[in-house]
Length: 581
Image 1 (cartoon, rainbow, N blue to C red):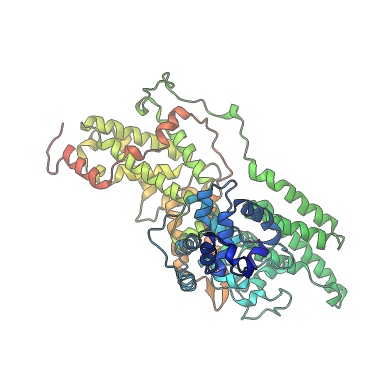
Image 2 (image 1 turned 135 degrees about the horizontal axis):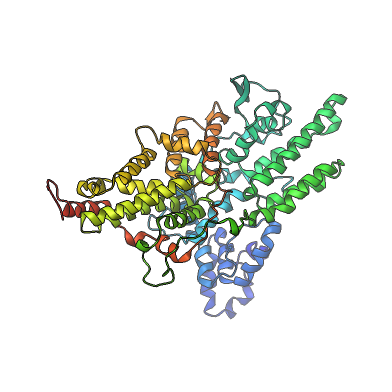
């Protein structure tokens, strides 16, 4: 690869010119190709070279041209076209809201972003992690990416860090108002703003012990202002003070305490946020153990980190095990295996259980960074989007199921069924679907059906009025928020209200204040995200019944839009009607 890309193909032996055939014109034409396109063309034409290139890339940090395990010729051609690669990068920058970076790339490449560009999902999904985790192979010496890539490397919500963060953590100097600020809250000193160096210093300081949530906030929210490789680099810097520079025994004693806190923090990071840990980060920690901890005779600290690393793969695959014997008895009809089975024949509580299991599987896949990023870019990640779409489908499914019935009495029957399902969902703390059903029951095309609701029993009306309190916009979902705050068991939160709260926080508080990271903002973000995701490790003890779930997983074919709903609503109960059939 290197020998080819280092020699211009136009340099040929003059004695061979008269021996060249029709390929001579092709060679001369290729000699006019810009140098920066040579590598891509080699990879495009020689898949064996591409495969070798990909095998060697981790050792020499080559840029990756393709990460498909067995790419077809058309896939490689798609990836390696200079225009296509540029379009993928422009598409990523557009999706992330990095308009300045996109404009800069367009100027340099002289390629404009095409609104008609339709990226392959599998390849487009590789762009973000490729840019964010790109780093040189020697992680101890240089974890950061090349400075020329900073504008692309940092996402739009990590855009305000100064070059001062490249300063070694021990060289930044004493605390001043220019690098760290504090506030007192109910007698507790809390860090308010700070440089990255000072935040990491405070993380591993004895003085931070009074700020009990500081570590948790930092480990959850650091992706909003820096990267995992940078945090690990700073922690290693914090550990790596030269003992010979310390003048007193007290200083040396303090250094050992700091080093211990650094290692314990890395352990906490691995144990609590194992999804952050790429192979390269893990290798960095292993090198840190071999090159720093072992030479310093810190064998207990070595054991701590080694245990966490060895358990990392297990933790990523294991789930909470539940005893099937404790599951409640299923409530299914005798014809559960019948191809003509309908939801009308299934008990409301079992429908609520299966709806809850479907929602919970989506909810547990959501990562904290998705909520944090969504609140800033307002471009929802796949799992958050799926959760929102699920809520909307439930709402329209409820409304469509009601409006599709001709008589008011029969409509009241299906309304009662949905009220009962919602009441079971309330008992299960399955709020995403619960509020989705209530939204469907209270949307205008359904709410106006006065003759239908007159057919409800007093008990059903009372239950509905009680459930409506969970969607009380005037009181900002107060009933729901109070219930969620007091819960310790299983739950699927209603994610919509929390996304709104995160957007408000992002728009109210700046990311940076006087060039310092606004950590106060991250405390507010942490409070919302942790309250949303704290139920992810508390699964429901319900049997999954596929014969029922197949009705409930995809509801897109069972719904109509609100305009059509209203049109049908006025047909079954016309405006001004004094009675209906």
